[in-house]
Length: 117
Image (cartoon, rainbow, N blue to C red; front, side):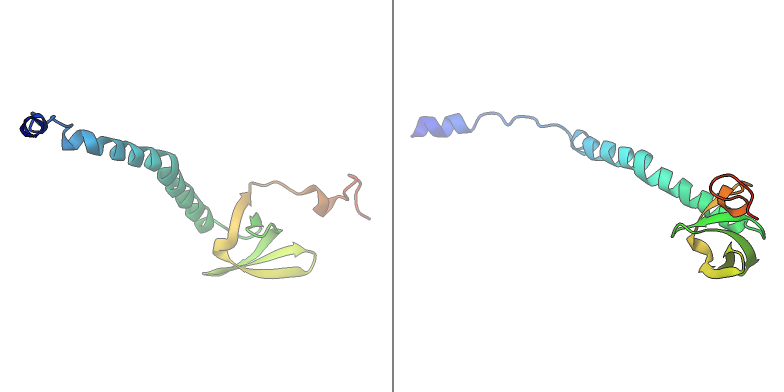
């Protein structure tokens, strides 16, 4: 029995330092930051700038998928004309995309490409 006690008292193995143990956690955080957090912050910043630069007659797409032209701008809401004499009021933050001067084919022309008469 005495020999077993001496065998267990061997020199303690030196483990890695605390910095080496913490390094994988730091690497995971760095990957999450550069692949997930930072791009999302940049996207939110660009969306906020786009909402701030809206003006009348801009064509937009809402979060619900409605295409329309802005006819009135309020502080927190926007009135869109989605068809002739059809206007809806939506929250300004629900505008997803600004269509940069693109005219939709189905508004001035029929779906077959011919002028509506």
